[in-house]
Image 1 (cartoon, helix red, strand yellow):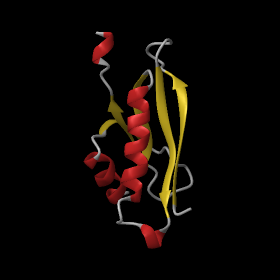
Image 2 (tube, one colour):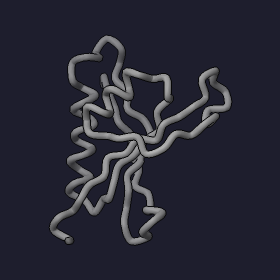
Image 3 (spheres, one colour):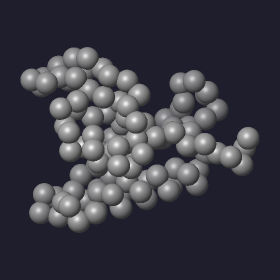
Length: 108
């Protein structure tokens, strides 16, 4: 295995009848990066969310992790909020919450 993504379903805080998906981890072995593996993993998770009753998908990213921010922006994620001093054990402790919102037109 050269890459993996771990996600979990959560109840939507705004609407208890909706579900959201939280990306816990996404990783690709260093020697296999820049071959599109991470993009394939993320796009599969996004496709799976679109097939389910999922309102949005979100994750936390270290504010200084510019390559991760660029990666997620390329896949349509936007910054929802900044969490100051989120990581207590890191020199640069600020975190960004990124999200991608899905609009289920069949239910409108």
